[in-house]
Structure formats: structure tokens, C-alpha cells
Length: 393
Image 1 (cartoon, rainbow, N blue to C red):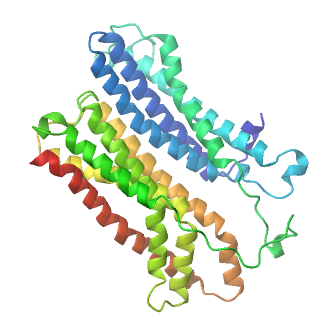
Image 2 (image 1 turned 120 degrees about the vertical axis):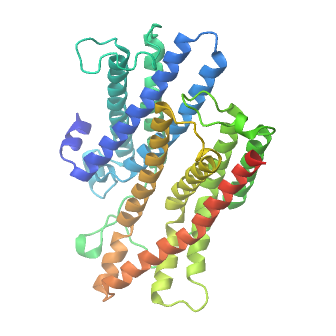
Image 3 (image 1 turned 180 degrees about the horizontal axis):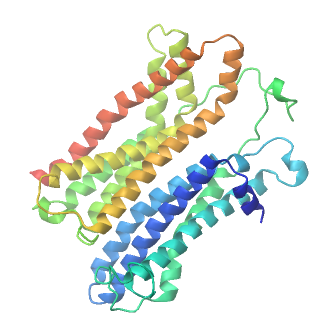
């Protein structure tokens, strides 16, 4: 009940982000149901059914990442001073955020089930009834228990991931002009330590590229065609890409941290110092989503290099999965940037009170974006070229 009341009183942008999470959950649920329908209609093709299910794990992971990012930026579940007195401590707010995430994802799963049954023709008297009966293998019965288990994957995974990501968040300390704080505020905050995942990220990325190259030996165009119905790509290539994505996500914070150090090198001025210090402090928050976006874009570039000019059209399920992955990763990056902006709002207000021009803050933001683009854009192109090279020789 408290979750519903907070949802009703939320800002329209917060509600929009929750609706986007529900929409992404609906898309993933629909893909999972399609994989289940294929397995039910083709019991002899178990390998193809497993490959379809493996393909669904990519948009599932992207959706869970987006749901966690939305939960972190929800103002109604951010720990604040004074809430513990009314029984809303950090642990209770974490449970509340996980519950809100599960409710949003469950709403999307229900929509996916209704849409899937309608397009199969199982629900009569509705528009577009049975419009995709052939694509969704309507001739075979749909196991209800298996469908419910698959539809629960997104809500359960998103709720657990949100709870793990939000536990132990520090309580926000208000500014002196906003009221007294619950505890003493540090006069000299300790600089953020550099992330330690850069070497492991580089190693995992190299292993992922090696696995993709090994699994694509021989006639590369035969081994890695773009799937028209999510059943043509071998599992080894998908596993290699997953390792590459995890490696780039681990390396992203370290790369962003060193981008901040790069901004402060060679006689920096006040704006460059501010931009570099903020980027170093936010490296862990935005570096991971930047690495995932880099992995997704590199996969898109590699796929276009292989099949962009070919005659083979994309199937509807491939288009849906691609839109989900691209949309969720981009939305996660934007949401993480919004969270970083919320966290440095105190610093920005303090600088403005001290006389810093607003244009200097905007210039610092532009500098951070420019240096990240200058580093991650060539990295994306390099990973795409290395991934496509074994497939074109």
C-alpha cells in the first residue's frame, strides 16, 4: 500500500521511468513466451529452443540493469535524515525500492502475457486476435506453469538486483542552509580511490573476443548469421560476446577515472580541475553503463559490417530484442548520469553561492562528455573491428 501511495505522489518523470521499466519488462516477457511457444511447438528441436532462450538473456540483463538504475534515482526511496524516526530507515527503504521495482516489472509481465495470448488467438473477441498465430506456434498448447515461471524471471531478478545495489546507501546530509544534519559533515572529503577492475576488464574482454573468434572459425557468415527468429546464432558466439560485455563493464569505471585524471594534466585551470575531479568521483557510477553501451554499440557495428548490405531481412523478434537492448542500455546510461547530477547538486549549489558562474559549471560538464566520447568511441570501434575480423577472413 505504501508503494502505491508513493507511486501516486511521484513526479511525472519518475512515473515515466517506471513505465519504461514496465514496457521493457513486457518486451522481455514476450520474448520469453515466444521461446516457450517455440519449444512447445517443436519438441524435436531442443537445441534451437535453448538458443532462443539464451538470446532472451541479453535483453533480460539489459532490462534488469535499467530497472536498478531507475530504482537508484527514485527520490521517494532515497535515505534522508529524519526518516528513521518514523520507521523508514535505510533497510526499509531498500525493501520499498525493491518492491516498487518488482511491481513495475510484474505489470509489464502481465501485459506481455495478455498480448501474447491475444496474438496467438487464445483470447477471443479482441482486436488483432490471432494475428501472429503462425509466428507464435499457436497450434501447440502453452504450458501455463512454465509461462508463469518465465514471466517471474524479470520481476524477481530486478527486485533482487535492486535490493543488492541499494543496501547500505549513505543517508543524505543536508546543506547548512537546508537545516541541521544528523551527523558531522566532513570538511575535507577523501578523494575517491581508483577502481580496481580495469586489468580484469581488459582480460575478460580479450577472452571474450578470443572465444568469438574460435567459435566463428571457418565460414564465418554461416556460423554467425543474424537470427530471423532468434535461433541461428551459436551459443558459443553469444557467450563470447557476453564475456566481452562483462569485461567492458568492468573496465569502464577505470577508464572513466583515468579520463578524469587526463583532464587535470598539463597545467589545468579551475574548470578542468573541477571537471576532472567530478569525473573521478563519478567513475564508478557511470563507467559501468558506459562500458555496456560500448559493448552493445560494438556488437551493432560488427553486425552491420557483416550483414548490413546483405539481402537477409531481420525478423520481428530480432528487431524487438535489439530495440530492447539498445533502448535499455541507453536509458541506463542517461539515468545513471541523472543520478550523478542529483548527487553533486549540493556541490553545485555551494559553488554558485561562492560566486562561480553557471557557465563554468556547464563548460565542465561539456568537458567531461567530450573526453569520455574521445576515449570510448575509438574503443567501441576497435572492439567492433576485432569482433568482425575473424568473420570476414
